[in-house]
Length: 176
Image (cartoon, rainbow, N blue to C red):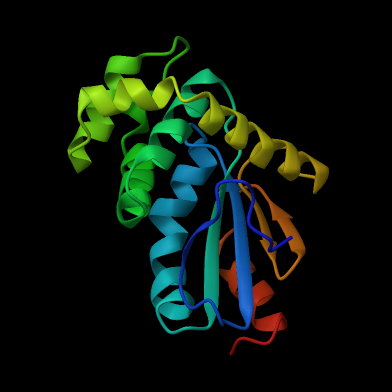
């Protein structure tokens, strides 16, 4: 469960934290956006920033727009991964639609300084595409059917998880 996939993990918090929270997320998911906006800041302040939780995000793109955004997010420098992740979530209304709108996805990516040449090259990177597919397939093998899905030291929770729900899970795993 905690072993990184083919691209490695993007995580926040101490590598030695007693609790590991793994979130499988899709950048087009409104429940993921809601969690990011309403629950994550408090979770980060209370548990991640204090060394009690290591927080791992794994891609589980639902739809082609989410897949393209996930590829672009992985092409960003590791130091900007969470910044771009947050931008994709908070600006969903600008780029998410029934059809894939690459210019709109690029509009979000250029906010972190990504060039169009880097963006286009990234979308054509087959090894990145294959690796992201493996991350999603691994999620499916773990029982992920939708997003967000969380694993707190292996305990699974799905959907619109509240702060109180994730807090209870974290604290039951020994992080007080």
